[in-house]
Image (cartoon, rainbow, N blue to C red; front, side):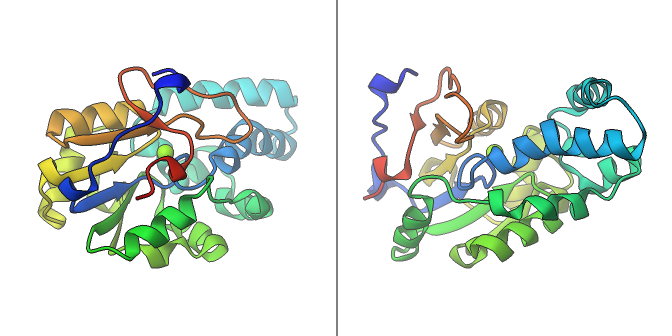
Length: 224
Ligand SMILES: [Mg+2]
């Protein structure tokens, strides 16, 4: 959808559950993007005496092979594959962990209603903990669910079936906001009725094309 038609109309009376992604939706994806595309390749190259460009090409190729799987989101998987302390290196960049525009206000507003609010994320539990430590984001949720505890990435149908067993919700009264289009497509197939994407998940990169999905740029577009 183009930015011009971007005023999603959410009928809040119809919604009793909001499911929110973390990285690229509530928090700036710049932290994650910069880590995987620049900071890790640089440091991994140093550790292995590789040319930085060679290291980067090799890593980007490996990322592509794992994209959309639980392994891609798993810090332990990469720590083992690269023989590198990923979590420790991430701690160097905590200054890049930030809310997206008006996300905190949106969460505060949701908390003043009876709407049930859950975080559903592919992020590893250790990373959720790190980000909650910096932002205090954990206080806003009735439930925080990592796909690692479910055993399937959000891109897989099984994730949504297992999620509903863990945390019953009415798909016709649920809103999911997620910057990842393949996650939104899987959720749509599962039956979640209200879906929104994010136009600019990363503050330092251009807008993404959200294709068939309506997108918010800033959360103040849907604050009620
Ligand atoms: Mg995301």
